Length: 408
Ligand code: GLA
Image (tube, rainbow, N blue to C red; front, side):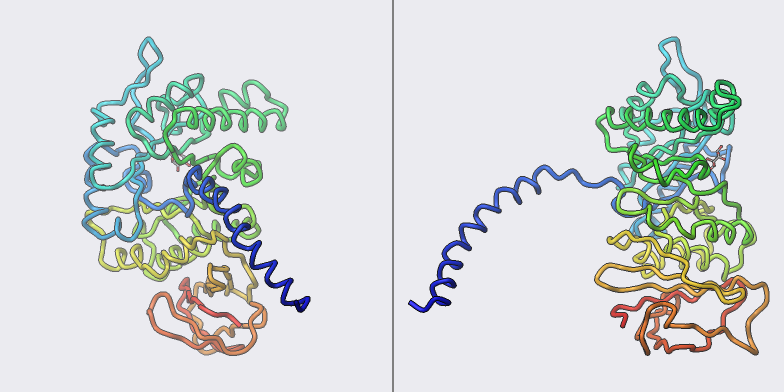
């Protein structure tokens, strides 16, 4: 027999055995695989940005109703998160009760779940939350079990009083010791949540101090705030965008940088500012937690929050966050690699005046692209051809957001 032919026959004879040998391993992996919690950035609505301390059980039920009625649930918004001010007092056994604004948390969770949605809650590692309500210090396991018994799916854990009543009180002149205390406190609740047996998304809220992106993933954090509190004005939003440059490498499926919740539809943000905010949160693979007045949402705000093309960028399963590529004067250019070799580009005009007589020129070369590119404009839905140094005219604080399916 010809040597090459006998070799081929030998390979063919062995091949089926090899695939049989691999098959059980594959099946086992599939059977035991635990789904990654927050495999894509969590999406939902949180009570704080609109209701702050006034939120009630009824507001949460209304929010759940509205998320369904407006089509936001179909667009991917699943978590309905109660922020601060639901907490009551602890009884003699240490069990925490709700206050009168939330008569029965289990019934509320059942209601939210009956809509196909999930319920989030809020606490912190100190004695008090930011709004001065009971927090979880020395009751971590008890609270985690309580959340699980109610059917809670998400916990935002806010540092707040812990820095004063623990870190500053116990290690007044030792910043490193303070940081260790803070990390230990987050580890403690992370373990308590795991031990509760219920998958609960773990959101760290400590304002981006001491680089949480470096240590939060290891303790089971699914997201961690990278900044102080967002405000419903352009200055705050643009400031936060700039603080994200350099953090992309820390994000990925199950663990995300959190530049804080959405202010889309709040305050006096212009249409351009609202869609730039949303565009950039999508570029940043940020959690999309709306915080607006859902029953009175204007059609243009709903159109922004439910833009499926922009949401698809945010939720891209590759989970790679976008990076700042370059700025030219007041215009910033970011890009984000997407699954299937696609790419998103955001061109943001941070200037306060309209660029008209001399538009910005987009450098494709700086984006690593070679010549003409076929793209889709995520806000008009239209095809657009990008050419090197093409002029781009943008209103003040507006963003051009495009997706290139096959970048060259
Ligand atoms: C902090 C957080 C906010 C909000 C409030 C509630 O300021 O950063 O997002 O949760 O506390 O008191």
